[in-house]
Image (cartoon, rainbow over all chains, first blue to last red):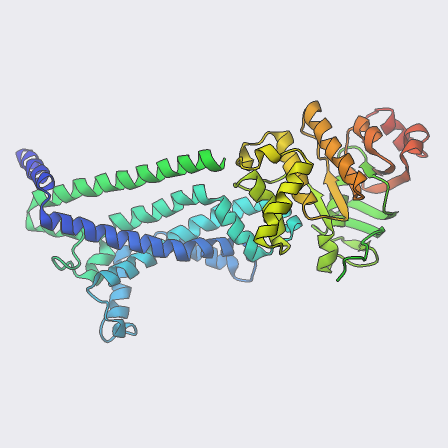
Length: 234
Length: 243
């Protein structure tokens, strides 16, 4: 127990002093996760909406697959992207392996199904309610998909947050494709894994605090933004 | 290019709609001419709303056909010349004005024109002062008038209204009826369903009486309310419960 309190003390000092290594790790983590989520939202929101409205043979299979991919094991995603991005792999020419870019791509692949699957469900429910009205006004399905996305924007914030939760907490994929290189691809989660195995619990705990605090801040800010929007847009 | 051609009369030819083995609309043949306000009456489950949806093209008939001015609903301009207002209109999560502008955008009106035409339509239904409000914050009656403005902005030749006042209080109902009367005065053909006999007496020129999916009467309102031909219609007018 004393080890635990000691670690807390060191963690607090590191945070208070604005330790440059810690700050660098935090900033890189944010950059990777936020980029991945942004990219995943750009892909996943329209994909989910189109899948909600489209009717084609094999659609049910795709929906099931998408839902299943929400729980895709990060280490497997890491392994797959490691093989794809390695010098001999099909995407080797991108030269992304062991860079933040590789981490963004791998996390984007993990987050896109989460955002797309939740969007698909939300938009499909909303479409039931809106279908007659939008058809009556003469909206094409494509147009309707984007109208529904805009009308569901407040609820979709939660889908994007779920994606952010996945990205910011994930370690399996980025440790494989990023390599946990100090100052280059070391993020909060990979550093925590490393420092814990090395026995440096204070840095691990300090990073743990920051990670939890940032998660709270991001969720709080989103909640606040959504409430403000709800008041403004009804 | 179809600016001058009319989609009236509306002809229903042996129209049927079958779902789950039940004939919900059963062999309806009728012709609705330009001019008189047509009210579709009948007890719950008679098929009033279904008939409007068939006319509007929201659902396809199982048998028979709907002809607007001799044309089928397959032609886009035929669909555009008629607008529909629902019992529970969906308003989009944006401002009142933007809701009207949305309908205009769908028919290709330019951004600049949209704002102007939306303002005009809102003035027509008395919602000008609420143009910047979020549409979701409107009361039921205001919401319905917004739906009327959204339909009106499209300058339809025919307005289909499905129980537009069914869930409104008397004051809101009066406001909506006033708007409908104004549309009629402007030359828009009104085709409307209601289960409110008082409202039917106030608004109808022409009555279609449906019972169990069949068209039992198509008569001028005066005649329908005083000496209906069928026992069912007489019972309905007398306020008896029909099954």
